[in-house]
Length: 411
Image 1 (tube, one colour):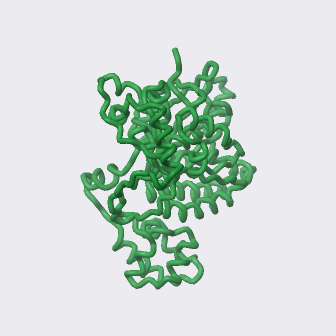
Image 2 (cartoon, rainbow, N blue to C red):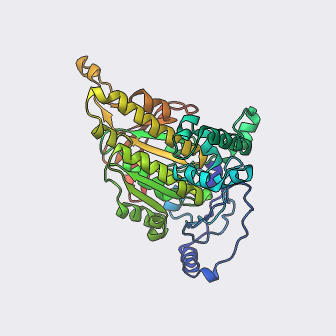
Image 3 (spheres, rainbow, N blue to C red):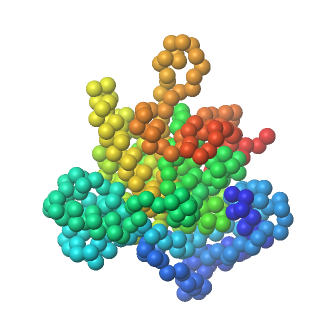
């Protein structure tokens, strides 16, 4: 994040922002920017945009001390929305229509899209049995489709160097708005992975989701990813007025921020499965940076109440988490899920002071790339602790909830 912060302009003013908004309101006056030609992922970028001048390098070494988000909050920089920037094309992202060149007919491609498969990589992710279950696709057709998809993608072995060049390079990290939290997370919330925040009520889970929903739309030089946001709400906690408050604190147009968020109220676990199937079609057309599910276990806790339902619940949960994992990799998304907790009966019987445990069992634990515990501190302060991560050490930090989302805790 230090490298990102060093790009932030300390000289921009609110007048610059007003001019950017004015040019946004009058598209004919906007300066046209030639976009690089995409290799394999053409998108119809309909994201609401505002002009943003390229930020020059910071003039003093101390400019890199704060995250770009915090620098703006202190009045040091000017923040604009800018989502009209083409992301680096992913060679693995090939639209499902490309299979037509290999002899797959349009009717079969339409059936694949109706089943939520919009790219060649989505075909690779799907088992032969699941493909054969699609009405109208015989085993022979499925084998031909799979063979065509394999030729379009790099689904085989690659070297570690190739992995760094083709996979790691495209990943991004979303700033949270707090430099201490960003540092704890290795720069922010990572794309192509699932980040789980769990804790008791009032520990800041939904506040983090709202903050990230605004920051994800900002330019990369300001800690964002120039993308839209998909927000799935299972507990009726999404609040547009909170999004508006955070957007205003960053100096961006709240209406445009809300227009760049697609929202769905989820009522049960089967509805969640359907929503995750439907959203792939939207992500194939436009650039999305963040997918939020708040909270992941809410519908499962209601739909499966008895111990006898546990096996069925975990099977469906595994299906949902697998879908989230595939979406994160297929569309280079930062996937954020929140989770509830339960008291540990064993700890209660032994009078041990163990913290509450996240629900979801081993299925959720294995699918979550990074697991983060949240708990309430004094006043608006919250404590964040990394519980499990493939690349981050265990650690904790303190942040606080404020009008712009979250920020470093004041001493």
